[in-house]
Image 1 (cartoon, rainbow, N blue to C red):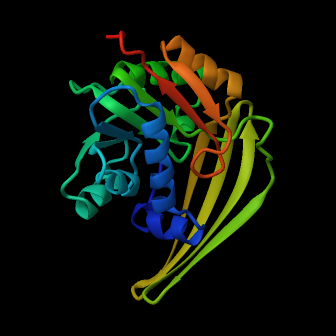
Image 2: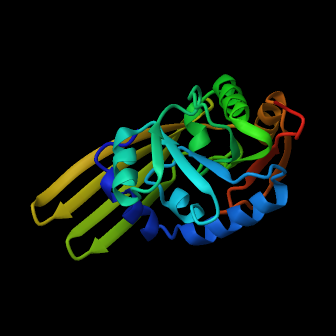
Length: 239
């Protein structure tokens, strides 16, 4: 999904104003409100570079899972005390059952299709302990996505300068983001590019996926970062 940007990923989103500690505090409050199980095992699905996992590790027994081996390399280097696994959110298999599963930063949209959305939510629900809670941060809905918009972010550090420009596009039910990077270091200036494709799902499609997975679901319109949050709870009598 990403090319050379993994090692600059956290700097880029820090420049964009992402507040991981505030998000972790909100998550902890919502987990305490909705979780019915007694345990504290947490799986961060699509954990990226592991910052959320690290911040939540003070309250939970945390593991992380991500598809991208280079993202996992960053996470393992930065947080060696946390267990990180490589796997696809749609079909990963773990023997553990978790009291909490989170899938944040709109990573769920990488499944792209409604069928894969339902399969992914079902798979995560299957890994929940009875009474456990699943929290999924959605991507934009079709009505919220506006093709043709251009954005830029600049990172200005003593030893690295980065300009990232993005263009939003759309093809059917897929949102497409075209990124171009200029990366300057003492070794020289590099140019890089990547294209991300994310599924545009309606609120009904998210709610249906949770219900089909056997979870009681509520939608928090604000969530942790203004994008909303779907919160699904597994009943205590479900295996």
